[in-house]
Image (cartoon, rainbow, N blue to C red; front, top):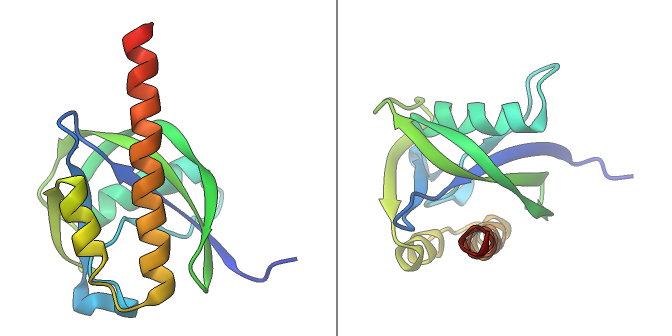
Length: 145
């Protein structure tokens, strides 16, 4: 049985395909740009945790549109991510966040690639890839419906 902590987070994509990234204050844990994620509060569901983490870390209210169907390991944590759409932006984020940016998927890959933590970089590149793939499937499915 794994002794790793479990965390959940969100990948927020807007209707134009822009990806929401955050820059952790001081590039915590070697992360240059990443997705919001964290551990649950007592009694909180994975979905509630992910929505809270997105709001706290980026100031963006979001809604879940799907579960990215993998668990990602980053060395210390097992991470589950939800695909989300933005609902509203407050313009305020936590003290742990240095900056928030909406970027193209190509720019997101470049910014994530600046991470010096190899486990975090591999996790976030995989999360980006899988979230874009899931959104394409959901969008195609909606177009056919």
